[in-house]
Image (cartoon, rainbow, N blue to C red):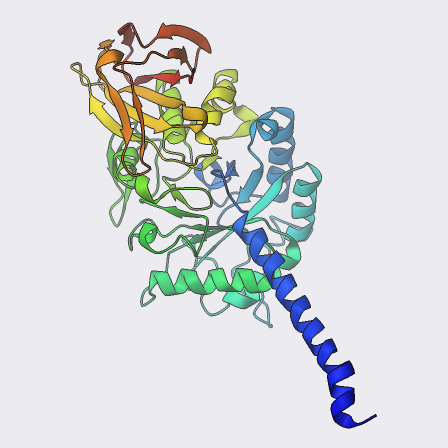
Length: 416
């Protein structure tokens, strides 16, 4: 057989087959990443309650509690281990080393245990040289760390922004995003850059969610706490900063107003309910941050309310926004839902009970960004109280009720 004939009949088809196989593998891999976080991620994170006081025992017991409490079945599937899980130094080959005292059997054993409970596992690191708690950061080790995370089998990476002097946020997070994709395991990438470089403008193809503000606090419900070199923000002040960003959210790319403080601090039941409701209205990731071993039945009922969660997890993936204020200074927020339904939140941020009278027949609910509207002036729809899970009549009659201070009325308008 002549050389050209052998090349054309044997070698060329083999080369083409290998190229096609490679293209197919890359296409399948890319599709897996595209399917991540089509609704806002839900789970639990260790930081708000435990900071760096974490351990193998804590994580295993938390996984058990997520299952036994019903939180996993309500949608809280990601168990995220935050800062402080590693030793203070990398090993001689540059790999991160799990703290042998906190995690005597290593991180892989913990991940396997979490996976055995039908949960997914998340881990923390930082784009800078050190994490916010002073442990080894990822700078200069992006591809090495991503390979190790993939080997361990993590499903979610929270990537912070401490010790990042001299770094460009877009470049740093893009590098880590490429490293994750190169490693091949679909991992939800959470950019925790605090909104400093406006990631909503550039991160849609970098990660699945990005923080929009500094850290949340449970020290107060509506204030800013000065910590000297930085500030922490209450749920209501974070909400104010987040609201204008609703055009940038959608399936696979979410604005992240930080983790939930439901069940933490000294929040009242009404404040917890309002906080949770507004995170759902904003299509926010729902990451609980409370001590599940001390969770009250009231806290659990709020966190697992299926009707509120359904608003957050609605498949349209539209973030709600503020429509107006009523005569008694109640904020009115609207969020389009699938099947031509809408969620409407009446939020009383004031210190006194509000008397609400809302005439639906004068209103047009409109989301101009997504070109959706519901004209209530000539058509009437049934409405339901989401928290009470009961009908409230229809939009052909004014809504008259009272809303306690720091509480909320959450309504769903039903399609005919």
